[in-house]
Image (cartoon, rainbow, N blue to C red):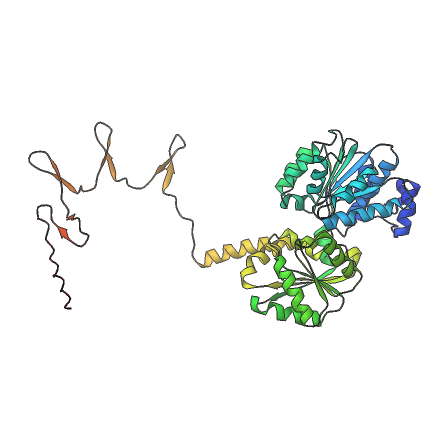
Length: 460
């Protein structure tokens, strides 16, 4: 598809696309838009930075403009991504369009959202928790929501939103068009797709390779004690905006404060900040008011800042797939970027998983190395102590300590510690312990008496 005019879109959309500078569609857009317009469900693999938002926003708006009552619900895992998505929808709709869009996210005053809902918006974007809050209060109706978009579905499942998504779908029509987008296709995504989608068209864009081509990678093996000093050196030699990923909320605050003390303009972004504060931080970063943003993984998705040139992984992500999303914050829209990874000794296993994800041959190399090392070390398979009988049951191959008697009862073959006397009584052959732990006597010996010295009387 060379341009959007081939699709025969509404005049409102065509004008908005020209204003936004969208002339030719991206690979995900050229594949997804015709299928969505045809009314089919989609299971798509694409990440932010590849034009994914436009891939579902353009056809959804087209369908709503051509109907009188149809509505659409777009569910995102994070507030930042919801804000980004609604900005795209509002830009495509234009200021004078009667179709309104509403954003329902946590951290904002619910009264403000109630006022937006009173205007009867036909496009609703939000996070699962806040959407369910409005459904519970009956301030939101999804009876006419014939279009559902689940954006970054893998991230929503990682964050534990599976149950909340199920609750939302109870309020939606059973006959609807569902569009599901995910960075990868793990088992839980496939299970969810079989549950929600009806004969979906599967679209896969080679995101990982397209991102890696435009990103220069640098790995720095370092001790935890030298991480901050190395960060300062990296920031001194690099120009442009830098996004630093840290593991915890506390780390983001600490690193940002230390950078400010060392004369570097920085700020922190994490889940503990109020929504108004998060918006202020993001606005300042987009406007280049400070150079470094230190953030947790909430910034790994939904953060669209074109001028980010460098991504520094101060702490490696716990999940290998999150690495792709982190480095995807740079090299946006075909630009070039750099990704720097600090790998400490205790993070070696995390980097191994990332390496196997971004380098398909790494897994084969690792298995061959393991085989070679096993051969060098003379390792061999341990023989099982069990054998399979005719009835496919496993039996122990070793010698048993029991023997079968004539009446098919099992008896112990070892030496007994008991002996039978002349009158048929059984007596213990070994030594017996007395009540005192320190005194040992034979079976016939009498217990020895202990003598203690008399206490001396104190002389007054």
